[in-house]
Length: 226
Image (cartoon, rainbow, N blue to C red; front, side, top):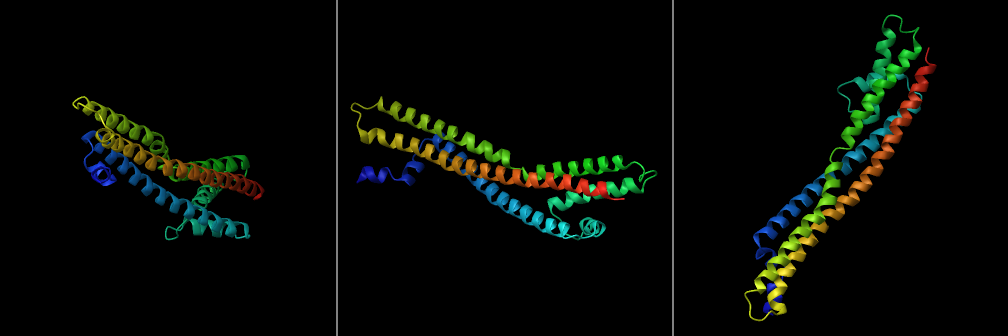
């Protein structure tokens, strides 16, 4: 009964060595930061997908381009990523067209609008991909941090055996158990981060494809404009 009480998870964590406790605390902090990033990134991607679908419906419904641009450039309106890309391209197109000789150099108009949309595309992708690097790092590093705690705990457990006349399972079990808890916490921090990173990377790639497709289709529309 005493052995069972001593091997409870709470007791093992409380009576673990200082190094192993530091490893556990670090892994718990990484896990908390990972879950915070996961929830915030989930909401951000859902909002970006919803705003993209909404703007695509308005754009392909045959709305006037100048009306769409006026709504997109209104600072009081909440715009999505795709709408901001459209705004950047349309603003550059109108700016170049209103300049001297703008109507004659059609290719310069298209190139300028495409460059502006590409710049807007990169800004939006940087925003969408924020915190992905942290999730990737957490997923790859956490198991090794937990393994370090495991190695240290096992080493400490076997070092304590040198002072005993007779080694028993009861004497070595607490040290090994606390070491294995560090590994478990490392996996707990790593697995959700890896799964979330793969899912977010897939969703962001799909949004990127939709943005790039819109840039090409909108460039074709501008090419047909007189």
